Image (cartoon, rainbow over all chains, first blue to last red; front, side):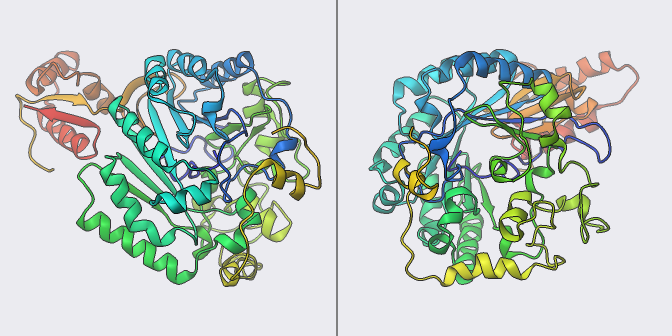
Length: 394
Length: 93
């Protein structure tokens, strides 16, 4: 899901799946990352930097079993993402099974690899919704950021999505290079008759972390972009087009309620079968995340160390442990805590109450002051270089 | 957006929305792109009957048969207007 907003953003109305101290509720959201392969090279991709070194993809039968097991636990929302999920030739088979099981299935795609026939075939198989991501509102910038000439094709596919009767979410990931296009992005969404638009400010995981010096918007840019989005929403948004503008938590003094709490309602299954409480969690050290190749989803969700590690409140340190806001933000994001402080159990330093709050300025906000940092595009060559030469598939 | 719902209107789920029973939650839910609403018992009973065929009058009569003795019309009309304003329902006369 290189290009998609995190689930907490995109699920208004989802209820928390568990109560503190009790058995977890159902994993209401299952994200199936079908492949890390992708024809695009977006430098803000949230996939692991060493994605080329990650093992063999699950096959069709393994995915079908995962879908059945998670549905039996009560999963309702299913995201097919990647990488680019359209690269999987068995996508229609998986969608058909998902429909039969009663999932609401969402395809999260760049549109590259789609054609009108495939849009129709997925509809026929029972796909409920397609989210198409754009890199920018102009062909020039879109194609530069994506590392491929894809803008015209995306426009065509967005029209095909509407033509075939799907609800359509358009997603734009926002960063320093495209943030000044916010208004024209919304214009484009209106022209394409999007039902929902997500303007998701880049979160700094995976490739985006590597590129933070080139991607971090300045504070002035953030303020101007939010104002532009509000102006459009109030004055020009077509009736029925919903706009979600996701403001980055690092510019605030309270952290986001990441994943609505660890192991609370969200499970990701990565292309190699690793089951994770969020798509960035693979990087956290000292946690033996379970694989669907070795365990069923019921065990993974209820009993595995990986999903129980930061569930509830017992794992918390001060100041979270005694904080009266801990049920609001669950201590923030474990991955952000790890990347900034080196301790995955620390209070997310985005919180103004964290003794290490200054790290947010040092490591993130000040990245906006970096003037000339070339973007490192996500591709197999750069993956091998950044991860010390390991990995040889793409 | 906030016009009153009429007894002759025929409410139907908006495109892209799905209504179903979820055993794990012991509740009806509404599913839509990347989201879900868990419905209360009464909301579930009303939405179950919003099939685009029946008018509000027929929905109310059906509910009064299923739950005898209750005077539901006011609540049903209010709920339908709210559901329409949230984008869950399309209501045509």
